[in-house]
Image (cartoon, rainbow, N blue to C red):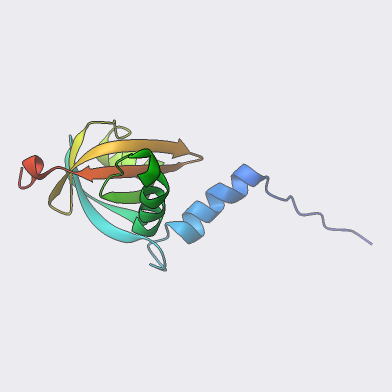
Length: 127
């Protein structure tokens, strides 16, 4: 009798698989939506997960410290962002998100996922 042993994924491999198959999967559109980002390479359509609920939680928890939180928070697949935009977002960088101007306020890079917090920048609207 032969016993079949399947190799289990380690945590990082499982997280990357979930990133591709669940979190940012254009086929199911459960979480991610397509948005137009204008960066140094011009306009690019990228699938992102906008999470303004998390942004609001952070804003409320930081009010006592008088910390300002940006106007939008989203998650993007790092590989797609690099392919289409050309570089990881930089704090203070201007970009257009669906035609509206923003400044990058914060960037977290974790296991193939970028978490980007933007603050409104009316000066960049309509570049």
